[in-house]
Length: 80
Image 1 (cartoon, rainbow, N blue to C red):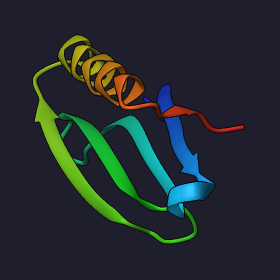
Image 2 (spheres, helix red, strand yellow):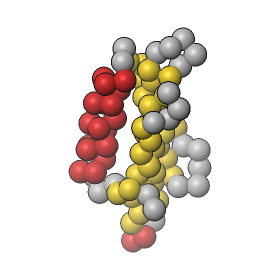
Image 3 (cartoon, one colour):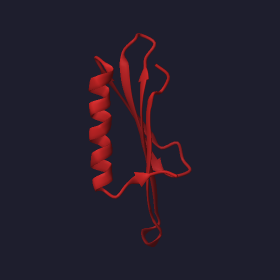
């Protein structure tokens, strides 16, 4: 699998000097597991990263969609 699922969201609010990003991707590990990789932080930085392992791609995709939905509720939008 070659990063079939990727999503980049951002939230920009100039009045609050807020420029945040949230990136999600599903990748296979060297051991054949499926990983959901979440990165977040200020735009222009690497930010922080968390890796969650799943038994199959379907479980990872459900988690990706859940995280994306929660971020959309907090006014994150797809990056251009």
